[in-house]
Length: 471
Image (tube, rainbow, N blue to C red; front, side, top):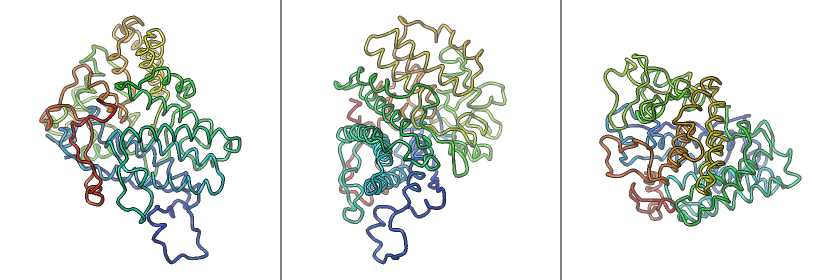
C-alpha cells in the first residue's frame, strides 16, 4: 500500500519561519506590542512560489498511478487498484498555501502592492482548479475565515471553475498596472524571479489549459483557447517551474528511496511500453533520460496492480533513478510549460479543423520537450522522421496528439484531466490488475481529516463519479 510522503514547507531567508495561518491570527489574544503583526510579504512570496510547485507534486504523486506513469511495488496496492485512498497530506498542503495566498493578497492590498496581489490571484486560481479537478466541490468562499467559520461550506465545481477564470483575469489586469513592474522581490520569487511579464504569460497559459479542459462541454471554444495561447509562452525559457529546494526535488526523494530499497516510484509497464517500442513500434530517446535499463539490458515496467517480478534487489524492472531528468536532486519541478502549451494548441487547432496548424504545433511540442530534456539532435531528428510520428497534417489524429502529450508531460497531474476528458482513449490502456472498480477512476474521495472535522458539509461521492466537465 502506497503511503503519502509529507514534505516540509520550504522556508527561506529566516523570515518565512514566522508565516501565520488565518486561523492563528484570530487566536493570538496576547500580542507582543514590539513584534510584527504580519509576516514579511517577501517571506510569504518565497513560501507560496516554492510550495506551489511542491503542491503540483503532491497531487501528481497520486495521479501518476491512475495515468500509469508509475506503478506500485506492492501487489494490489490501493493507489494502483482504484481503492479508496486518504490524500489528507495533499489536501492540507493545498489549504495551507491557499491560506497564505489569501493573507498575502490582503497584506499586499493594504500596502498597495499590485504585483503581489496579481501573483496571489494567479496561484490561488492554480490551486483551486487543481484541487477541484481531483475532488470536485471544495471549500473556497468560506474557507479562510479562521475561527469565524471552522466548518466552511463547499462551492460547486462549475462555480469554482468560473472563479478561477475570474482570478486569472484579475491577476493579469493587476500585473499590467505600471507600478507592478519591478515590484516583486526577485530573490523571493522562485518561479519567475520577480518578472511581472512572465507572470502574465503564465496566467494566460493557465487560462488556455482551463479553457481546453472543458472540451467535452458545449462551452468549449477553441478560438478562446488559441487567443490565450497567443499571449502565453513562446519558448522553454518561459516555463513556470522551480529549481530551488530545501534538500532536493521530491521526485528525487523517490529515486533515493529506490536506491535504498525503500520501494516507490516504479515505472508502469504502460509508460515503458509506450516509449520502448512495444506499443507504437518506435523507441523514444527520452526514455534513457528518465530511467536506467534493467539487469537484462532493456526497459521493463511494472504492470499496475501486479507488483514486481522476482527479487526486487535484482533490478528486473525500471524505476525513477537519481540521475534521471525528472528525478535528480536539482531537476526542475514544473507547473506549466511551453511544451504543454504547444500540445494544447495542437488539440485546439485540430478540433477547429485546422490540421496544418495543428500538425505544426504537435511537432513543435515534441521538439520543445526533447530540447528541454537535452535529447541529442540526431536522436530527436530520427524520432521526428519516424513514420508513426511524421504522419503529415492530413493523417494527424487526436489520439496521436494525446499520445505525444502523454509522454511529454511525464508525471504531470494534467494528464489525468486529459485521460478523463478523452474517456481514457489511449492505445492499449486498460484497467489495472486487481482493480476494485469495474471502470476507470474519475475522482478521489475526500480526505479523512476533512470528513472528521467538516463532515456535515462534505459531499458523498463515489470514485467513478464524473466531474462536471467530464460528462
